[in-house]
Image (cartoon, rainbow, N blue to C red):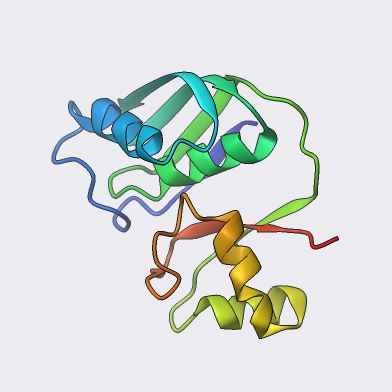
Length: 144
């Protein structure tokens, strides 16, 4: 999984300067570890690079989103992460002004009540289903 772009000026404020970014982002990911072992993070000029081994493709996707949704991160690279192939089709969605998980579920699935599925599939990325922010990127997995 290669490069992902993010909005550098928005997101979770995890670190004060780039020197402390790798340690703070790693701690953020490991707090709700989606399934990444031997995690290493480097950050240079707003570009974060993730290394390690993911238990699943979704674990890697979540680690990328947790990293990129941090203020100060503009790009995430994860070419050196070992991960099994994706088990299901996933789209990525950038939260727009006025969005709620209900509205996103209506757009993506045609049924707002499926917002709970989006929340569960992004639990490490979204801590509170009522607190998403414009510019945040989330996973939208296909529903079987």
